[in-house]
Length: 438
Ligand code: RM4
Ligand code: MN
Ligand code: MN
Image 1 (spheres, protein in one colour):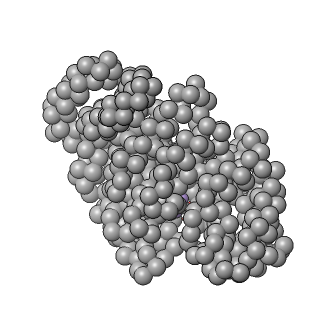
Image 2 (cartoon, protein in one colour):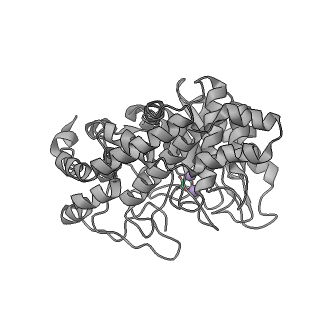
Image 3 (cartoon, protein in one colour):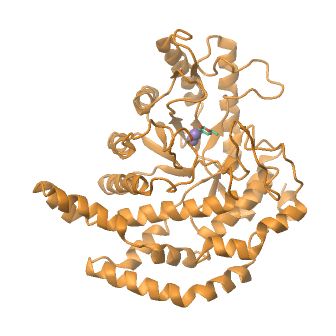
């Protein structure tokens, strides 16, 4: 088809805007880079190796995070926000252009439904965007749907509702095939609001039976990512509530099934880096949804509340990568909701936080750490992590971005482009739109 790509040429940030903003900041950047290189050199680390590794890191964007989110109280729409999946991809491409970190988008169905997925794929390609894991949605009722998910979907007490939820997941696989995706992420809202409402063993049995049908339909080179969440929308019990249930399900289903860790889906204070290490050790860490959280919200910007935790998570990821000798390939994605910021700015900041956590994990002196651990030298072992975390690595991140055609200061450059204001002139303003949830 291809008409979409022709009708809507890649917009993005004009190259001269990036060049102009980078020129303004270049001297200071190069001085900072030289200082960081010297500091790392004293630790026998070549900054060029770090930048080269960072340039291989890729993180998927959530299509549903491109539109202003909301709470159950209200949503405050933003003029110029995207109104359909094509416009979401345009905005994803801007994040990728400036950050150099996010070359794929993770779509959510039916929110991102369109009539021609071949055209959508071409549109993505024309914007430098590929397609990450497909997300199914059986936590809401959709227009025209025969049966309600009010009391569950894949684990529902009635076979016909389970069948409908299975069919939806199968259609997501079919869409994903056309888009070139390689994974299906299944997160369900199934659970209960009252003790006694469901029999918790029955629901998990039914969930597994349903998911087996989906699993069997997966293409050979695909993964099924099982996403757990402690609570919400179900407030008393949730069918796939934690990583324990998640890994049991993934092990029951087989090799193509793995666990997806959404950083926001745990009880406060849970040691998520431990969960990461355990899942990786047993070959079941398949993917990530990066975000942050403080109390109940699971979708704050990555690194905005607890950047040390993000670093500790990356410390385990780098360690798992070294152990696996390159075989460890989790799908990194963001899953955020932006209620009071421009989504593009939040995602640019999050990209910086994720890249920073990765680089800080890369510069941990692992040989020294091991020997401190062997000697039970607690302070020095701890400081091996602390000192890496406290290192200002921003110049390394900026260098990776520059080499990918991105911006030294992505948010300043984005603002200089007036991208959102220009979009507000051409995109229709619809206060009723949303990521699907409010
Ligand atoms: C859920 C979960 C899923 C996402 C939805 C929108 O809390 O994090 O990954 O698909 O929100
Ligand atoms: Mn998620
Ligand atoms: Mn979530």
